[in-house]
Length: 116
Figure 1 (cartoon, one colour):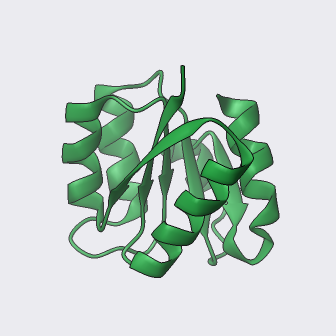
Figure 2: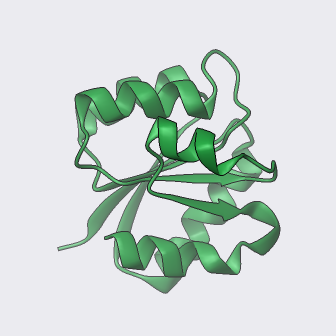
């Protein structure tokens, strides 16, 4: 049975690229959200197996979304997928399970596979 992955990024091209890439690499169903608020709402309804969050998004950024999601579904792994350098203290305090740079996107499938 395929795992469900929620991809939240304000850039539709990035969301589509990640969705296409993951679908080619593994048996997953990818869902999408365009901002942090939408990610939280969608995740609470669909209960994904893993969540990928961009850091800089409108309405609610990735850090805020991750905090809200960890409160409602602490067992679901959350991957921060960003171009920004995020201090490890912030990553740990928020509860991200992994960080993958958009500049090194080939590591994303490996990370998702490991967390699923």
